[in-house]
Length: 285
Ligand SMILES: [Zn+2]
Image 1 (cartoon, rainbow, N blue to C red):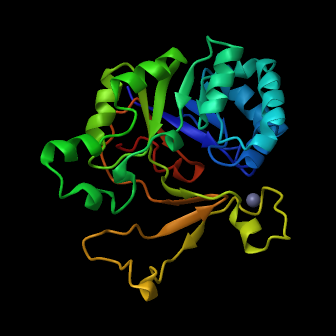
Image 2 (cartoon, helix red, strand yellow):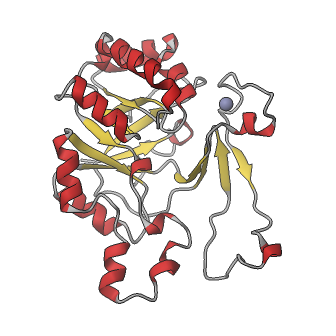
């Protein structure tokens, strides 16, 4: 049965409404270490997930890429997490191979899930298929697959007790994601967004280098309109046969678009964001 996982990656997450249709909550952040620290240590959010855990919901932890200067603090947080009851047995979603190694060394029984930022695929770029369309068909088939679909890679991650993976999905990646699932991994699909890019810092800080961000200002999505694609330089022009994603959004340090409209009833879990809570009450997937 497909379950729904609600992402808690913002301080303004609404803890007062009803989440009966949700079976799992993942708390933390997939791409910003500063936001991760703020969210995972927020008392109100911790109280909320404790309550949900007591209602039988699954509680998961989502972690981002870890810049070196935050290593000591992430180790502290992981130690804190070990002492918080509702995180006992939580799956940790990792977007950093070093962190995956460290968590496994600390506790080899901790179940891990690969974050979508660790998966690569030509088709995740809107023009990806154009890169290999002149190749032989069997080569096209091979390179359109998600990078995890490889016996040696899957065995490698299984040694780290990685039992699941997250993924964005496109028409051409469904097949290899289903094969990964057949190999024993749970596959959790994003219906909340499709990542196109990550930046080092959030867009508030990028507007003005002197301006700080409390972690609240960049929580809301801003629409991002493209009006030019380096046309002046003549080496990149928009082509009619590339469906450049529009609109794009920017939130925190992520640039994303809408998830592709592809049936995902085969997935083990659908990851949604708070904005979608109503859409998914009994809706088809
Ligand atoms: Zn910010």
